[in-house]
Length: 382
Image (cartoon, rainbow, N blue to C red; front, top):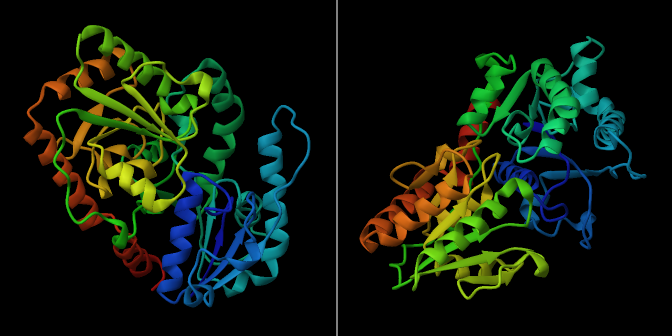
């Protein structure tokens, strides 16, 4: 079996949730001895030609094709323009190989030109699947400016490509509902969640200390709801004379945007996997108050390390977070976040511990890449 995996970069050469999903998809397809023609580019200090983040055996099944992403000055609509040009460059490279593939998997706008050519009947090839991370352009935006970008720039091409592709990949949950709403038939939708490596999962959960340790993991981005979270925590601090809780932040939070209070503890960006796991396993509850999401890697990684989760019910979050494994918020409203935090601080520790255990068990049983890739190969490559 041979597939073309056409990406907008893979982790860690390009950072992002979509890029990490591409990395693991490529890695575990190679472990299943599927030949993978990997189309990607580099935005890091690493030597992309070495593919040093794969094993020697995995590399024997991966055939990288490096295509530089177009550069140039910014202008209104430059994001779409550059993505379209990148898709044309990819098409030029892949066209002579089209008859060699059993499946063509495209991420974001990378298959734009390819999908159009097939839809017009100008080429003949295997099924082309498209994956837009979380279809965030159809989710609720955090600001008026972003709403305008969604309405006037992104929705039209995403809707068109989703309808024209042979397959549309979804993480599941509310993302599948969004894909249906934009006119894609159920027969074209394939749900492939994200996952974690089985070896990275904690053996057991850790019982909490006297103070509940909450965690925000990620960069300072408007879409992630960190401003609403900060407001909620500050309101909660003012409500108590002595608050038995700590709020840990891991990620590149700019110094001038950090809260000046002893309850806020900032660890900065942590890239070392072992050190990150140590920090995760000392916490109890991940907070993910996003405005929009795909299937957050931070939730998967937190649950795999024995944390329960508070998250807004967006994207495919509800595939992971439910009444057994955590708490879902209707929206990233500061008052709603504060009230939820307040309720959890007052809970008996055993209730939080039970949810931590349920979260860990869910990941072990359903969301390992070893399991997910078997299902993917059985469904689409046989």
